[in-house]
Length: 50
Image 1 (spheres, rainbow, N blue to C red):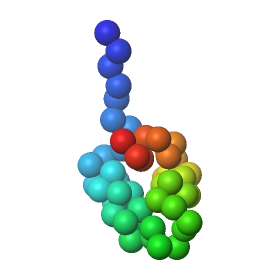
Image 2: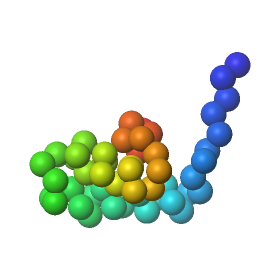
Image 3: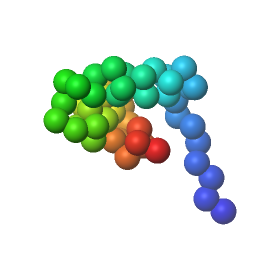
């Protein structure tokens, strides 16, 4: 059985998702925004995307 652990609190996750929406226009794509923000909070862009 593969169990994952939530490394980030719900507040941090909500803030990261909100930041992607707020800063999407600053980047060429939503993926670029996710990549940039993910590196700042210490996760991967794929984690943030999910």
